[in-house]
Length: 97
Image (tube, rainbow, N blue to C red; front, side):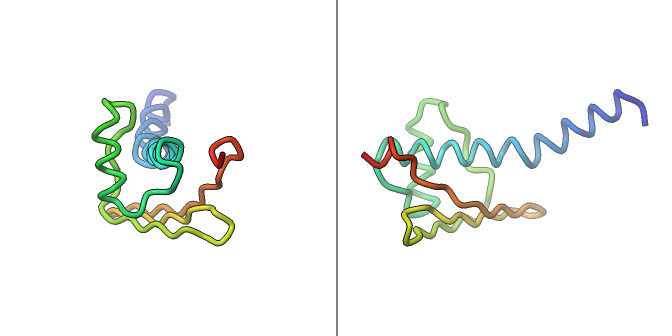
């Protein structure tokens, strides 16, 4: 495989997997900072993103579930065809105040 093909492949993988996940996590964290709580559902997060004047990217998943855990963290399960994302976001001490 040539370096150019390898770079194109790496870019395609990152743009389909890592970049949407990082942007999605940033939007959820931004919501937490602004509202002092986690989003309840996809619609609430989408409305927040729309009001962000382009600061956050649209949600890259068709189905999203949020579950607040006993320790205050947020469990996230998000899916789209060919892509599943499970993550847990923790509360930063500075955000909790």
